[in-house]
Structures are given as structure tokens and as C-alpha cells.
Length: 571
Ligand code: GLC
Image 1 (cartoon, helix red, strand yellow):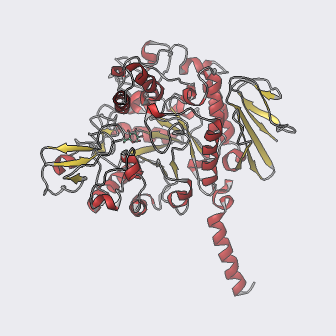
Image 2 (cartoon, helix red, strand yellow; image 1 turned 180 degrees about the vertical axis):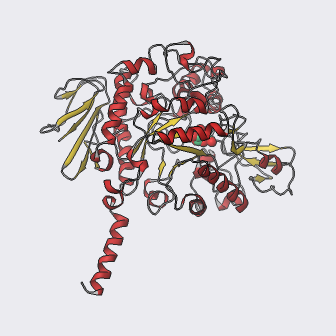
Image 3 (cartoon, rainbow, N blue to C red; image 1 turned 180 degrees about the horizontal axis):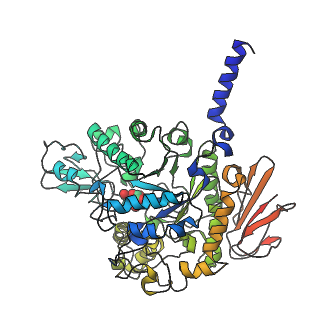
């Protein structure tokens, strides 16, 4: 080979390394966070070891063997930092201290060490768009217009008509300073001013603090809101008619990537960590700048499938629409296509979502079959499955009777919005019961004893009244339980190159009853088919010919799919 041919060859290889998913993500190059699922824990509701009624870090440590039994490689812990808990820890008063309700720094260190002994990493949550209004930075900032932290938050003389994500105005008047401050979320969550380099440095320092403590990576909260549009800084325009949601005005605006590139340089670069950003409104075509080898994060949570019932970013619960299966499938297929060269976090639930069996299946569907059917998809799309505590037991929504029974600040905001729009209490409650984030936050059900074994005290949120029939202890002993189905699926996915790395292709996208797709790698092929109805449905073709059933939520097999049936076939 002469010099010219050598250089040409080197260029071809370099380009291929950028564009080819098989080179970047071939089985031999997989990173640890691609090989196993992540288990998400809401510590406040997981296990209380002190009788306070609130879960704690020691509770997580105590249940590590249970978590390990799901085949997971990492745990994502929602915030456990010092906080007044207006938004259950997403309002942080000290970024580097553990809230005493959750334990001590020693407890965190023990958790990291015990998890490490089981080959599990701990991913912590970074809430950097806003702090608590009780954070010393804000207390100083609001004290005058010329204190050293005067511009650490976003202050204006005039307010706009923007509606905050939790309802009400996105601006709050501060008597002390004689100005308004911006809060994308609750009044108690003032937005930090990322234009100020000292703010950014303080946040990077906090992130690095947790890496030094042994964290294996980050889930990065609400990151799309950190950059307020330039036009916003020179004035405060009212939103166009009917779209006065702050989300539509500031999410993912020009210049945000400059901040994020700096964030990456200062915190992520050169470290073997996992980063997953919460990025509602990043579009599929923008993904290359956000994730993967040329992006910022390893992957990101986008919302297209979980917000499918809301149009145009209008996440008002009483404006929700029924879900068409073809639309739901399209969101999943589009995300699969958009992350072919990078990576996708597969999820149906988290601490902000209602229970998935109540969302994606008809209300008459058998919930156990439905939970297994969704799990089948969770573990067989391409990406890292995220299991949210309780999902693996097939939890259903817990419908509390009165709005006063709800703790979640967004449920109260949505209820008030519905009432202001003329809905009766009963109508408004129907939406709260369906979409409330408290559906995901009721205490974990460990056994049939008092308070489901979650606490010996009074639980901070009522335990779901089905706990005597749906809990870990019962499901451990039942070979056919949702829990044991999760374990089988996880073991299957973790040992299958096709399921981890294979290409995804959807079949029959317009079919409104079945979701069918293939995963292929070399000559190996897997077909997944799920019936989203509550009746028998004929298969559109003999798609399973020459293949063997690997797993399904019915024990036997038929040449059609029964109500809520999910199957995995392989060659
Ligand atoms: C994210 C969190 C949510 C929180 C909000 C404000 O969306 O997941 O729980 O309320 O940010 O921090």
C-alpha cells in the first residue's frame, strides 16, 4: 500500500467509525450502561428503616439483592439532597448535603460500596435548572439588587403572562427586592441564571462532588429549560395567544448547546460514567447534537410516547386525547430510528407518570397480562430499559378520593386549572386520578403486613389498597407473577446480542390492534408481537413460520394473538 492509499484507507475508517452503528455499538464495544437495565428508585417511597414514614437510603441498601435479582446494572436515585420538599426533593437547598430524612453521607457511601460489591452503579439526579427558594444562594440573591449573588437568578421588573409548568404564573413577586423572579416549575423553585459563569461553575462543582463520592453517572433534570431565549433577555414578551405555557417559550432554545458543551467538558469528559438527560422537546433530528459520540449525553429521555395524549406540548390533563395505537407505535419507531447511531433509554414509567397499565391498555384489560405485555416491549426495543419501582410488580393507579389526599404539587395545579376552566370537582378529579404523579409515588409494597412492610410508622402517602394481593413477597412465590416475568425478560435481554444491539424494524405500522417488530443481527432474528386489544386478533401473515417461541404472557401458543397477549419468537 502506498502512502496515498494508506491515507485514503485511514479516512474511510475514521468516517465509518462516526457513521456506522455497528462500529460504534457492536457487541464488542458495548459500554456497561448498554448491557443491563437501570432500576429507578424514588427513595421517599421505597423502604423506611427508621419508622419515620419516609423511605431512606438505608432502605435502598437493604434491598440491593432484590434489585440485583432484576438483572440491573445501575440504580437511578431521585433527589435525596437537603430540601424543603415542596416538590419532593426537586427543590434543592444544598446540592452537596443529604437531607436528614434520607440519612447521612455515610449512608450514601455505604450504599455506593454495597452496590459496587454487586456490580451495580448509583446514578444521581442533578437538578440544575432551578434550586429551592430556601437555598442560601437564593436567600442572598433576593436580599437586594446589588448583593454578590444578585444575578444568580432571573429577576425582572415586569412579568409576562407565562403559565408555570405546575400551574399559576411563572413569575413571583418578591417584596424584599421589589422585583419578579422566574420559576419554570413551582414558586418555591426559582430558575438559576445560567448566563452567569459563577452559577455554572458552582453547579459543575456540585456534580463533580458526587462523582468523587462514587456516583456512576447522572440523570439530568429538566435540562432543556436552562437557556432563556436571547429575545427574552432584552424584554419579556408575552406568549402568543393560547400558548402562554412557559415550556413553549423557553424549552430547548438557541444557544443551549453552548452551555451543555461546557457542562460536558467540565464534568463528563474522560470519565466512565452514564449520563441521561431529561429533555422534553428535543426533536429526533436534533439528537446527533445531543447524544452519542458527537453529542453531550449518552442518551436522553424524550417525551413523545409518554405525552402522546397531549398535543403541541400542551400538557394540560383535561385536554388529553385518547391514544391511537398507530401513533404510539410511531413515536417508538421514530425514536428507534433517531437513535440508530446512538442510544435510547426505553421507559414507560417514572416518578412523574401514572402507572402504564392504566395508560396504554383499555381499562377492561387484564392488568397482569398488560403489565407483562408492556414489559415485553420494554426489554426488546433497542436501548437501555428503565424499570420504575413497582412497575415490575404490575402496579395500578391508586385513585385517591379527594384533591386533599394528593401530595403532588402538579396534581393540585392541574386540578385548579381544570376547575378554572369550568370542570366540576368530579370531572377534575377524574383527570387527577388518571394522571397524577402520586400514582407512581405510593409506597413500595413489600409484603402483606401493615403498611405493606414499607414502614412501621405512618406512611407519608397512603399505601395502595391492593397491597395484600400485589406485593413482592407474594410475587416472589408465584412462578407466573409479573415480577418473575420481568426477571425472565431481563435475563433474556442481557444474554441476547440481537436484543441488545440488533437492528429494529416495525411491521404493519398502520395496524391499530397489534404492535409487531423485528430485531435482527447477522443471521439472527427476533420477532415481538403484542395485542393491545382485549379480544383475539388474527396475525396479518404467517410471521412466525420457521421460528420458535421464546417467551410470552400466555403459557401455550396459538396462530393468533389472544387478549393482551405478547410473544417473542426467535430463529
Ligand atoms: C422533572 C422531574 C420532576 C420535577 C421537575 C422539576 O421533570 O422529573 O419530578 O417536578 O423536573 O424539578
